Image 1 (tube, one colour):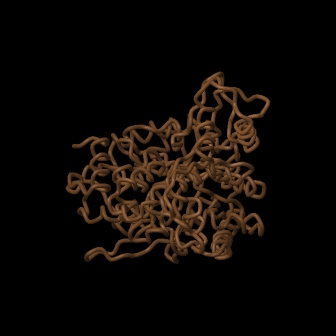
Image 2 (cartoon, rainbow over the protein chains, first blue to last red):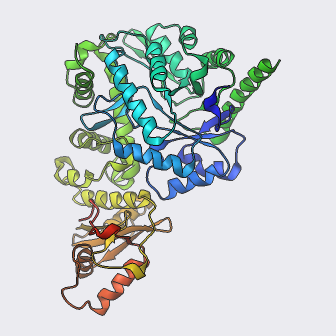
Length: 284
Length: 243
């Protein structure tokens, strides 16, 4: 088991979004842990109070979307301070962010944008990840993105960039299996080769989500919109990921068309069964 | 080869304003940029819709989306926490020509921002009344806004979809907005009470003996948790969304 999984159990969790705050606290669904978007709890008031109530029953993972680790301009110290304060207040089990950028020239663009896979960008990401880890005083996980476009300037495959970031900064990897699948289909990569390129010891969490398929001129593009259940092809890639990485905390993520809580719990139960299977196989 | 900073600046220009420099750098062709452009637009519109629900309902989806995108291009979010973004929407709407037929729209936005900011402001204990000293420092959830329309009634009617008895007459009004024990309160003040309240943040002594009404108002503000501890003697500042 990965040493990163010490406080978030190697079980299935769900993303907690505002529509489910009340039912999670009331019904205490049988999931191992919860993950929230860090930025939704940066103020005070009712949202933070609700998170603290949920925290009594579940370990919480903080998953950021607004730090912009790939920004050439560096990181916003205020944003770092707010992540640190929230982490201390709710004693998060894991803290994670994305291999992407969202801020340029002091403007936040509201999306996880692709980086050129260059040595220069790698140096920027590594400096920012190191600063992030220093600021909050702990190791973080970095998530592989869903990718729809590549820059002509790129000189290395994304998986190499991701692994180099982990090796140079000591951070771990949040392996989003759906993103691996989506990017592989969009760019003609081999999804299994992507998994094989990631060292077993650095993966601290897995994400599973749904994506949509759209026609784009004469091409089919898969878009990571977190708006539908996990598809069968991604479940199948997840099984292969578990065989490689062993039981790893696994999150069911949904941000759009959020279904009733039982539907998310059912997906988490399915992930849990696969986690149990691989745990028993490991023990045998 | 462009630097990372140049790539990010060109991409931001392409995604927000349709600039074309970055297009040649995309292996798959410039059409793929529209995937990100679409996500950005949806994320920014949704964020403003959550903060300004009554403004959204007053003008309808199509108008709101167009106004939100025009605002986002003119005043894009400065940082990665979208809850901090939207304080300048009221000022933007005041000068947004297509909104002119709805003269109270900007003031409704002013109230919604004050309410949203109060609801999500940092959890800081209110000032102990015994420790009160001028100038007072507003609690992070507190703001005092000046409006020219009955925006509290308009907002209530729009959100409840009940316009029975609503009268929309222009006249100067002042509203004190703050959060206490998890609830956001909106209290109307008259011109004199608003001026006195503002003076509490600006002066270190009363120029005249406060009237009994002023002292009662001060006690009311203290009880309502409108102030926070003044740190190491620094003078208080009104929050940036105050009038």
